Image (cartoon, rainbow, N blue to C red; front, side, top):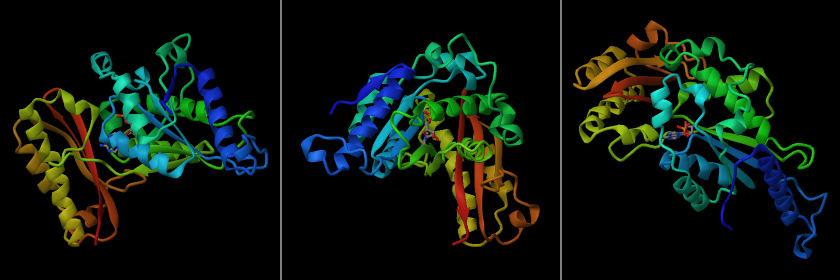
Length: 316
Ligand code: AMP
């Protein structure tokens, strides 16, 4: 079946209700007669929020959602609320037809691609979700308001996709986010916990190019030379990862020095943090043999492109 692309909230709700009913019916006892059985097992729903310009990282997210849910909806919305820089927003790649084809190839059922007006009728919302302390550091420090913008749109998407009284409660409602945006994932998990959203948040590992560069819709803005320079980020992460695996002191300053020695790369931060609180590990764990688990995070500017990357660390 060709994938359905809808642009309005009303169509989204109607299509989700239709798809869930169809799937529940298909599994029910009257399915062979074309009947929808009200007592049939309920269907599960997966949501994959994106800003489009999809690549293999998004593909992995969508595949994980398709594998675990009866019905999967992906959203494509370049959310103005989470952009501080108007030029960044304006030049963000928009490739809806190719995105829809990629999602169809993976087996996603429905694409929600609203206009800015549809999402924010009457202009920017007055009331927003705020990320609080978790947004003060790292990405939040250099992108004020970014995570409030993310949470506000994610909260709206959860409410819009969450099946209402017509569709009935799904067997499960899951939302898929990439580990690539580790701070975003931690903050969304925290919103779901603090505000009791009935959603299971699923984190999906980073997809990288063969040379180690984490895939990102912004990589296309890198020249060949800048792309080569950007490889220092994953090399720095692998340096501490190898030490973690060998129970050695992580010595993150060595990774900092490696990045700072790379021409064309302007380091914003490199640190080793607790994966949930994003607080830096205590000094002792950095300079003494590593045990346990942590997350190495990095952000840098390469040319005029800001790149982020991270790696879970585990003593093996
Ligand atoms: P974006 O379109 O950049 O907002 O990303 C949409 C979702 O895809 C987010 O949850 C990202 O974390 C995830 N994502 C982006 N790049 C990657 C990647 N290289 N590997 C895994 N997930 C990714």
